[in-house]
Image (cartoon, rainbow, N blue to C red; front, side):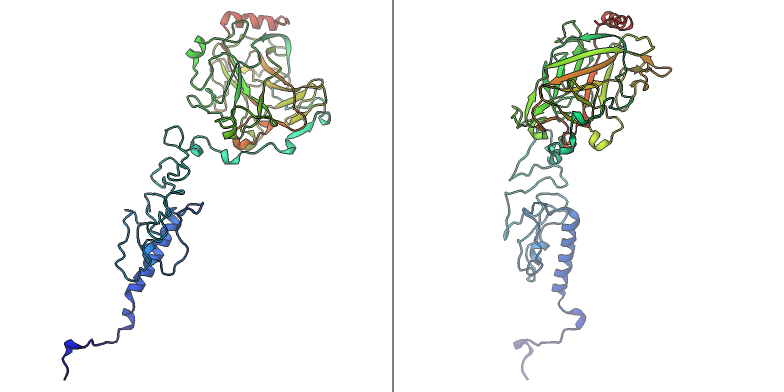
Length: 436
């Protein structure tokens, strides 16, 4: 009888014990596939992404991709293709599938950031889109850039097709008495800041503003800095007045590659107004009180395209047709200039000096131009801005990128820093029917 040690005895394998290793590999494949689906390890651009093939790549998917990022050692002979898609990162978020070995895929767009939060779209190793060192990518600092687009054809209208007497009802513009004007020039300086809406943030507006009055206005302005600033106004008024610029879309601006300019979808050469009038008016049947020192106001909604029409104040028109205003860009006839009116609210609560979407310290008058009971009638500011209009539809106002240059987003900002003595004189001038 032969000795048992010299020959391998083949015993039948029970049905339930058949290939355990293959079953384990399949289970691991399903687990890692779920990790890819729910762990966000497959970048949308396909760089270094997990492979779709499930044949012969069990070892690759059994490698890293676990929460601790440890890669498999290939000890299981069923895992023949270790390395194909190791997918380091799991919850660490390092580049989705780096693919060491097989498909290395290093470089390109590793996309570090996953759940580590390193810079949003830094894409280290490929397109490093690092911002200003604040640890946030451009998409987080300045959202909406991927939605930027030129104005639509429907954003324009021939001014001769606009009915006389049109315009948004109850949004100011019903005047009486005299006027007081601060002569401040047409454009003192420009930037894409807004200290009222986004204090302390460079490019907080994501579009360029024209300024007149206070020459120091920027993202970091406050009452003290403005009080100490110089002014472009001839009467010593240190108030700050600002509004979005208008551009000739046929031109090229010097900010084509800058924040607030081309990076935020605002392209073309900036048009300097041919005139910019900062004029204060009175209310019908009511005495006008002096403008409160330090009062801040915003008129219009810079995001009206997405927010809706409730706070739209846009009044575009053409010289020679000022009895017609429209919320669209007007196409003016030859010899006529593009104009826009920005009317500010003028019925004060008598207490607060900050008026914005969250605090209605100042509201618009009733449709007859009078302030409702309990509100103080203060001078009605109208900015009248005039431009040499480019031909046809080749112009647009700067906007937030996702607002796509909609003319209904027109808006203006103001803070009163007219000295108290001059503010009283301005109210007297308006109430007496004089133009000062």
